[in-house]
Length: 365
Ligand SMILES: Nc1ncnc2c1ncn2[C@@H]1O[C@H](COP(=O)(O)OP(=O)(O)OP(=O)(O)O)[C@@H](O)[C@H]1O
Ligand SMILES: [Mg+2]
Image 1: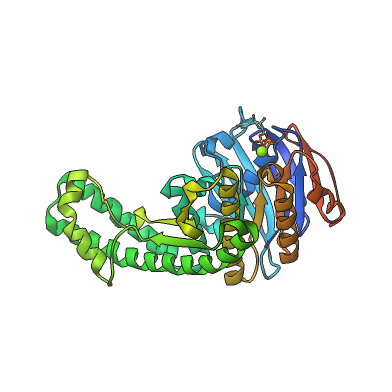
Image 2: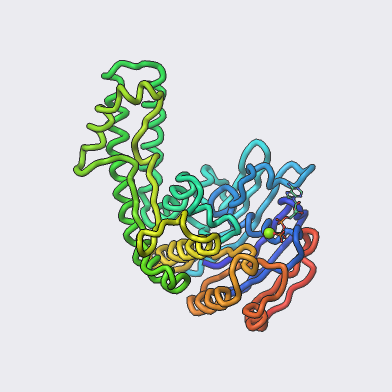
């Protein structure tokens, strides 16, 4: 996958900015607050519908403006170019794919895939389970075509069960929703478990490269409910009905799933230094890109925000060398040249930004 061109309007400090990235390494350089991360956010939004920064979607709309707009042309693995347009107002989305109006924003995500490593990526290990589930499900979504449908059915039935728990519905009214939750919940959990197996083997190699000092890593998943045989989840839901009525919510199920990473000697993510957490998050991001590429036959775009302040120079050098070998399209940001970047100056496309504007380009791609 490759971004052929990108234009952003009224996104954070950017009034209007256009880029034509090269096929390999691209670097956006500029002082603090110049709009580098905002460019990556625009791309990330196209792949997920939200930013990797915490503040709400509306914070992306430039102050005083009605909407932000993103246009891009993306070549897929077969070289077909898709035109994507997305406009976000305070009220909602309008999207177009190849000039056809989108009914669901999710249809974009099958066309454009981006993996991101950002200054907040360590929260994948230290933050809440919701973040880890989102990481997990993005990966499953791209390799299991039926995952999204199972998830939607599960969530619909879960909401209905939760409403019954609060309204004090009779036992007989729970059964259809618990059956629907069990059918879709067991399927999507099997898909999640299969994905974790694929991720595990890629992650071992990436972690060995980035964090050899921590020894072999273990990635373990929990489905959010205990079940050893098909049908267990439905039985468990029925058994827990009384307890769940007291809580007013469904206490177990795939909506409570989580995963954890640990290293040799049982060292858990919480025991790693901040730098080690970042490298572990980078290993996970790259492993996710590996699984995507193995399944689809082409790479997602890789976004590396603030690479120079997140990684020391030996890690930057190792990472850039490995990305160049893989032939990924990478867009990274930094405030200035580091040795590993300068060594590749003639082989990268470089964009200079200031005050949300492109002030120059150079490069050899
Ligand atoms: N909704 C908004 N409207 C206008 N300006 C905004 C909005 N949201 C953020 N900004 C401003 O946009 C600028 C761009 O921020 P961005 O994070 O992209 O910069 P950056 O180049 O990545 O900086 P750093 O090197 O510090 O990471 C900041 O000056 C910020 O104050
Ligand atoms: Mg930034």
